[in-house]
Length: 420
Image 1 (cartoon, rainbow, N blue to C red):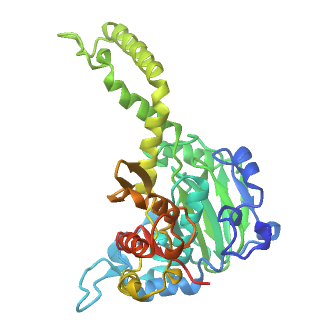
Image 2 (cartoon, rainbow, N blue to C red; image 1 turned 180 degrees about the vertical axis):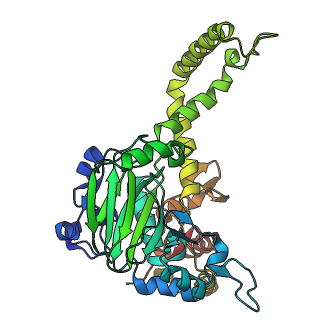
Image 3 (tube, rainbow, N blue to C red; image 1 turned 120 degrees about the vertical axis):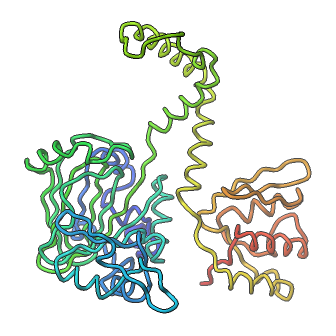
């Protein structure tokens, strides 16, 4: 069965955002140029992820607080007091969304932005975890809900790549080539405000009306703005915080502190305003830095790997656990047939397993869990990303298997496997 033959829940998350195959996307589009995919080309449907009713539920029933919500009108972000209020007795915190205030501002033409939906809306949370894993870069999701004929933000660029998924209504997008390609996170569009405005007044690279099911990939730095057309428009923006070669540079330079020549003090009495006197010092320092980087190159890959692995673990939190259901399962373990106790690794938990003399250690971003070495094979089977019953854990008798499963359930490392 191909990806295109599967239902939305079974398909590759990336395949739902593009109409070309993964290899073509990686070589021809990723971080290079936009890719617009219409629903007619791909038969995309995002109704399982989000809808108009979902927006109303989040605003009216979920007590969202800032910064999970913001509003903007004609390029200006509104003060939170315009759309938030106290929740009344027992919920006096003043930055909760006010459905009445949102109604007033939205009816007056303001765009509603629901931020961090990968944390607040389960279908999007699951989709985002899968997409992040496929891309190898962390993702987050906002929804933009725009009333008819309104524009929420001025032409600008983002410092992260984005996928845009049109959920409802129509929105006209105008996209221009970058004035500052591949901006880093500390290089916002406002640093190039005049150049962005000038480029946005020229001939666009893409000038199109998006309809439900349309999808756009846009590399960071590409200038864009959007206007809703004849009715309410809803689209999801999936921000991709791409790791860059700059991270490698930063890690390599950090290791330069091990070089004595680069720790040396500058000359006594030097004048930082004397460029001619400073130039040979700078040239000598750069030469020492290059020599240090070349000498450290063999070990740099492992250092970068450790650094990016730690960042990945922090940037992509594990799937949430269900405390009550898990506690009940733990309490029932002793009276349950081991064949009926089926668990799986907690999605996105990023465990690393190391066996030493006498123990097996499971290392997580926030803690390390240690078990006897005889549990090593069972631990590796439990963390193999496939459901397994306690009865089938290798190297352990039934009683020991229950002990291991109980411990890993309690630590949030494994979770009950979903039942068909």
